Image 1 (tube, rainbow, N blue to C red):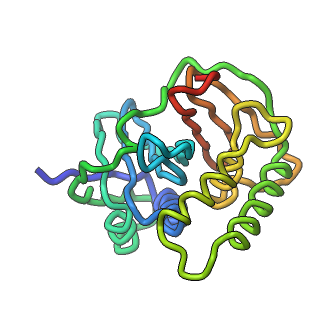
Image 2: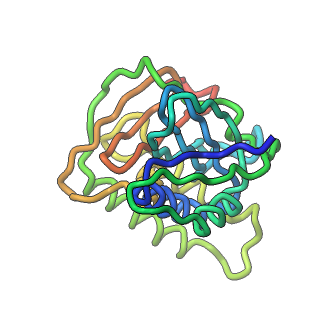
Length: 223
Protein backbone atom coordinates (compact mmCIF):
# COMPACT_ATOMS: atom_id res chain seq x y z
CA UNK A 1 0.00 0.00 0.00
CA UNK A 2 1.30 3.44 -0.92
CA UNK A 3 2.09 5.67 2.01
CA UNK A 4 2.12 9.46 1.99
CA UNK A 5 3.73 12.17 4.07
CA UNK A 6 1.58 15.26 4.53
CA UNK A 7 3.71 18.33 5.22
CA UNK A 8 2.03 21.50 6.54
CA UNK A 9 3.25 23.95 3.89
CA UNK A 10 5.90 24.86 1.32
CA UNK A 11 8.20 26.24 4.03
CA UNK A 12 8.30 22.83 5.76
CA UNK A 13 9.00 21.20 2.40
CA UNK A 14 11.92 23.55 1.70
CA UNK A 15 13.35 23.03 5.19
CA UNK A 16 13.20 19.24 4.92
CA UNK A 17 14.62 19.32 1.40
CA UNK A 18 17.60 21.42 2.53
CA UNK A 19 18.32 19.15 5.49
CA UNK A 20 18.14 15.96 3.45
CA UNK A 21 20.21 17.49 0.67
CA UNK A 22 23.01 18.17 3.15
CA UNK A 23 22.70 14.70 4.65
CA UNK A 24 22.80 13.15 1.18
CA UNK A 25 26.16 14.80 0.50
CA UNK A 26 27.60 13.25 3.69
CA UNK A 27 26.28 9.71 3.26
CA UNK A 28 24.27 8.78 0.18
CA UNK A 29 22.47 5.98 1.94
CA UNK A 30 19.18 6.03 3.81
CA UNK A 31 16.91 8.10 6.03
CA UNK A 32 14.67 6.86 8.81
CA UNK A 33 11.18 8.38 9.09
CA UNK A 34 9.30 7.97 12.37
CA UNK A 35 5.88 9.62 12.67
CA UNK A 36 3.93 9.59 15.92
CA UNK A 37 1.59 11.95 17.80
CA UNK A 38 1.77 14.67 15.14
CA UNK A 39 5.57 14.78 14.82
CA UNK A 40 7.72 13.34 12.04
CA UNK A 41 11.27 12.58 13.22
CA UNK A 42 13.72 12.46 10.31
CA UNK A 43 16.95 10.64 11.20
CA UNK A 44 20.03 10.66 8.98
CA UNK A 45 23.40 8.99 9.56
CA UNK A 46 26.64 10.97 9.60
CA UNK A 47 28.95 8.32 11.11
CA UNK A 48 28.43 4.68 12.10
CA UNK A 49 30.57 1.57 12.59
CA UNK A 50 30.85 -0.90 9.73
CA UNK A 51 31.43 -3.96 11.94
CA UNK A 52 32.16 -5.25 15.42
CA UNK A 53 35.80 -4.14 15.35
CA UNK A 54 35.04 -0.67 14.00
CA UNK A 55 35.15 1.83 16.88
CA UNK A 56 33.51 4.67 14.96
CA UNK A 57 30.69 6.15 17.08
CA UNK A 58 27.16 6.24 15.72
CA UNK A 59 26.34 9.90 15.01
CA UNK A 60 22.88 10.80 13.71
CA UNK A 61 21.21 14.01 12.64
CA UNK A 62 17.57 14.69 13.50
CA UNK A 63 15.05 17.22 12.24
CA UNK A 64 11.38 17.21 13.20
CA UNK A 65 8.37 18.28 11.15
CA UNK A 66 4.71 18.66 12.13
CA UNK A 67 2.43 16.10 10.45
CA UNK A 68 -1.21 15.04 10.93
CA UNK A 69 -1.64 13.33 14.33
CA UNK A 70 -3.17 10.23 12.76
CA UNK A 71 -0.04 9.48 10.72
CA UNK A 72 1.93 6.54 12.11
CA UNK A 73 5.09 5.52 10.30
CA UNK A 74 8.46 3.89 10.92
CA UNK A 75 10.32 3.36 7.66
CA UNK A 76 13.88 3.40 6.39
CA UNK A 77 14.02 4.59 2.77
CA UNK A 78 16.74 5.57 0.28
CA UNK A 79 17.62 9.18 0.94
CA UNK A 80 18.22 9.87 -2.76
CA UNK A 81 14.72 8.67 -3.66
CA UNK A 82 13.05 10.79 -0.98
CA UNK A 83 15.06 13.88 -1.97
CA UNK A 84 13.99 13.38 -5.59
CA UNK A 85 10.32 13.21 -4.56
CA UNK A 86 10.67 16.35 -2.46
CA UNK A 87 12.30 18.13 -5.41
CA UNK A 88 9.30 17.29 -7.61
CA UNK A 89 6.68 18.27 -5.03
CA UNK A 90 4.67 21.46 -5.43
CA UNK A 91 2.06 23.06 -3.18
CA UNK A 92 -0.35 25.95 -3.37
CA UNK A 93 0.32 28.75 -0.89
CA UNK A 94 -1.06 27.84 2.54
CA UNK A 95 -2.04 24.33 1.46
CA UNK A 96 -0.61 21.07 2.88
CA UNK A 97 1.71 19.12 0.62
CA UNK A 98 1.71 15.37 0.07
CA UNK A 99 4.82 13.35 -0.76
CA UNK A 100 4.85 9.61 -1.42
CA UNK A 101 7.11 7.48 0.79
CA UNK A 102 9.64 5.45 -1.27
CA UNK A 103 9.95 1.69 -0.93
CA UNK A 104 11.74 0.62 2.26
CA UNK A 105 15.22 -0.84 2.57
CA UNK A 106 16.09 -3.40 5.25
CA UNK A 107 19.89 -3.51 5.37
CA UNK A 108 20.67 -0.30 7.29
CA UNK A 109 22.52 -1.26 10.47
CA UNK A 110 22.43 2.15 12.16
CA UNK A 111 18.64 2.28 12.01
CA UNK A 112 18.25 -0.88 14.09
CA UNK A 113 17.92 0.98 17.39
CA UNK A 114 16.12 4.31 17.63
CA UNK A 115 17.35 6.95 20.10
CA UNK A 116 15.04 7.45 23.10
CA UNK A 117 12.45 10.23 22.77
CA UNK A 118 12.02 10.84 26.51
CA UNK A 119 14.06 10.46 29.69
CA UNK A 120 16.91 12.82 28.78
CA UNK A 121 18.77 14.69 31.53
CA UNK A 122 20.95 17.77 31.15
CA UNK A 123 24.70 17.28 31.63
CA UNK A 124 26.08 20.62 30.42
CA UNK A 125 26.54 22.71 27.31
CA UNK A 126 29.13 23.67 24.71
CA UNK A 127 29.50 26.90 22.77
CA UNK A 128 28.72 26.61 19.07
CA UNK A 129 32.10 28.17 18.23
CA UNK A 130 33.84 25.15 19.81
CA UNK A 131 31.86 22.81 17.57
CA UNK A 132 32.57 24.90 14.49
CA UNK A 133 36.30 24.98 15.19
CA UNK A 134 36.39 21.25 15.93
CA UNK A 135 34.56 20.45 12.69
CA UNK A 136 36.77 22.69 10.54
CA UNK A 137 39.99 21.34 12.09
CA UNK A 138 38.81 17.76 11.62
CA UNK A 139 37.87 18.29 7.98
CA UNK A 140 41.35 19.68 7.28
CA UNK A 141 43.00 16.79 9.14
CA UNK A 142 40.99 14.13 7.31
CA UNK A 143 41.74 15.70 3.93
CA UNK A 144 45.47 15.93 4.71
CA UNK A 145 45.67 12.34 5.95
CA UNK A 146 43.90 10.71 3.01
CA UNK A 147 46.31 9.38 0.37
CA UNK A 148 45.43 9.60 -3.32
CA UNK A 149 43.03 6.87 -4.46
CA UNK A 150 42.45 5.72 -0.88
CA UNK A 151 40.27 2.63 -0.53
CA UNK A 152 37.13 2.48 1.59
CA UNK A 153 38.92 0.73 4.49
CA UNK A 154 41.55 3.48 4.72
CA UNK A 155 38.96 6.23 4.50
CA UNK A 156 36.92 4.64 7.30
CA UNK A 157 40.00 4.19 9.50
CA UNK A 158 41.11 7.81 9.15
CA UNK A 159 37.60 9.18 9.68
CA UNK A 160 37.17 6.95 12.74
CA UNK A 161 40.45 8.18 14.26
CA UNK A 162 39.67 11.86 13.69
CA UNK A 163 35.94 11.97 14.40
CA UNK A 164 36.01 9.43 17.23
CA UNK A 165 38.14 11.64 19.49
CA UNK A 166 36.38 13.33 22.38
CA UNK A 167 36.18 17.12 22.14
CA UNK A 168 38.51 18.68 24.72
CA UNK A 169 36.60 19.64 27.84
CA UNK A 170 33.30 18.14 26.66
CA UNK A 171 32.45 14.73 28.16
CA UNK A 172 30.84 12.04 25.99
CA UNK A 173 30.89 14.18 22.81
CA UNK A 174 33.15 13.00 19.95
CA UNK A 175 34.45 15.36 17.28
CA UNK A 176 32.08 13.62 14.87
CA UNK A 177 29.15 15.31 16.61
CA UNK A 178 30.67 18.69 15.75
CA UNK A 179 31.12 17.54 12.15
CA UNK A 180 27.45 16.51 12.04
CA UNK A 181 26.19 19.79 13.50
CA UNK A 182 28.26 21.86 11.10
CA UNK A 183 27.64 19.76 7.98
CA UNK A 184 23.87 19.53 8.51
CA UNK A 185 23.52 23.29 9.01
CA UNK A 186 22.53 23.11 12.67
CA UNK A 187 24.98 25.81 13.84
CA UNK A 188 24.29 29.52 13.43
CA UNK A 189 25.46 32.08 15.98
CA UNK A 190 28.96 30.97 17.10
CA UNK A 191 28.22 32.24 20.61
CA UNK A 192 25.04 30.21 20.92
CA UNK A 193 25.21 27.72 23.82
CA UNK A 194 24.35 24.19 22.72
CA UNK A 195 22.75 22.13 25.51
CA UNK A 196 23.97 18.56 26.04
CA UNK A 197 21.71 15.79 27.38
CA UNK A 198 22.39 12.14 28.19
CA UNK A 199 20.18 9.06 28.28
CA UNK A 200 21.96 5.75 28.89
CA UNK A 201 24.47 5.20 26.07
CA UNK A 202 23.08 8.14 24.08
CA UNK A 203 24.16 11.80 24.11
CA UNK A 204 22.16 14.59 22.42
CA UNK A 205 23.21 18.06 21.29
CA UNK A 206 20.25 20.39 20.76
CA UNK A 207 20.08 23.52 18.61
CA UNK A 208 17.19 25.53 17.20
CA UNK A 209 17.91 24.00 13.78
CA UNK A 210 18.13 20.33 14.73
CA UNK A 211 19.64 17.68 16.96
CA UNK A 212 22.78 15.55 16.88
CA UNK A 213 22.55 12.16 18.59
CA UNK A 214 25.58 10.06 19.55
CA UNK A 215 25.46 6.42 20.60
CA UNK A 216 28.54 5.25 22.45
CA UNK A 217 29.94 1.80 21.81
CA UNK A 218 28.34 -0.95 23.90
CA UNK A 219 31.58 -1.77 25.72
CA UNK A 220 32.32 1.87 26.56
CA UNK A 221 32.70 2.60 30.28
CA UNK A 222 30.20 5.45 29.86
CA UNK A 223 27.62 3.17 28.19
